Amino acid sequence: MKPIRKTYFSFLVAATLVFVACDNANEDASPTAPQLPPAESMSAEMGAFPSNGENSSKNDNQDREHFTYAAANVVFWQSILKLQLAVPVAAFKESFNHPFIYLQDEQRWKSSYSVTVGDKTYEATLYGEREEDEIEWEMYLSAEGQFENFLWFTGESELDNTGGSWTLYKSPSEPRAVLTIEWEKEGNEVEAAYTLVDEQADKVDSYIEYGTTTENGFTHFYEVSIESKTEEDYEVFILYNANTRAGKVKSESRFGDDAFRCWDSNFIDTTCSN
Image 1: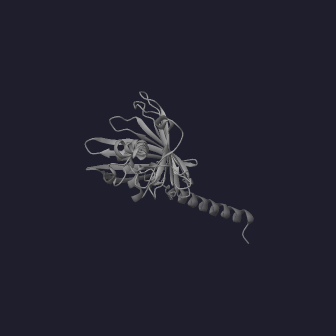
Image 2 (image 1 turned 120 degrees about the vertical axis):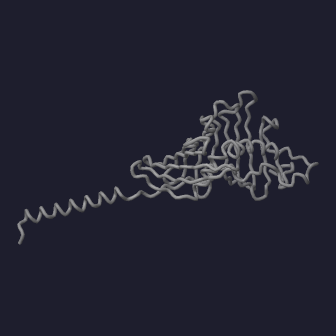
Image 3 (image 1 turned 90 degrees about the vertical axis):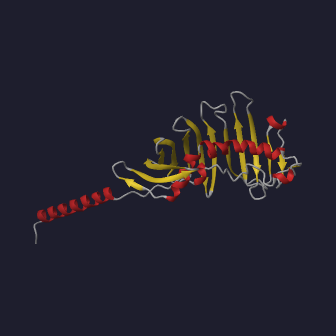
């Protein structure tokens, strides 16, 4: 029989070796890559609201005031994402097609790829870093001969991807915050609020909030608040059916009362049934 002290010493040595081996393995192992926020959290589609009524040429003699007014207030926000911020929005959309690698020294994830917008190609680098119970995001973009590693948007998302936010910057030549997006996800549905934060814009602090609705006969809602340095402030509320294309809008500033104005599936003004 071995002495108890020698046996105990052997046990301690073996245990120490196992602990060190496990600890080294944990250091070498890469954490699970973060889950990207939903594509809808940064999208110009906004529930597929049409910017122009299809077949409008067939209805030149028809009154389409209600839809036209509603569309103008949604298109304002769509144009910011489709035109002013087309590059970072496209870079985020492309990120779903590329894997992350873990940077052990920096303790964050990185995804690098190219994205083409129009006739220009950009090099994109998206970083994700865990901070307590959320992921922080940074998107850097470069264009050869024009700019390098411009931080075009930042963001954060909950670990379970139920909510988060984005901040988008105007351009490499004007690197100021222009738009923030607050988003929430429940099931497969995403609701988002876009706020204009560009201090040089006439409509700074204006916002649009949109999402799905259980309102009978409609699929989406849009709540718009416009604040202006040079014009009258106003609010708009829109209900839209993405399947039938019918909808209704109300704005006391525009119509003089709080009643809804409706349009049919051809985007033509019609009397509201309820």
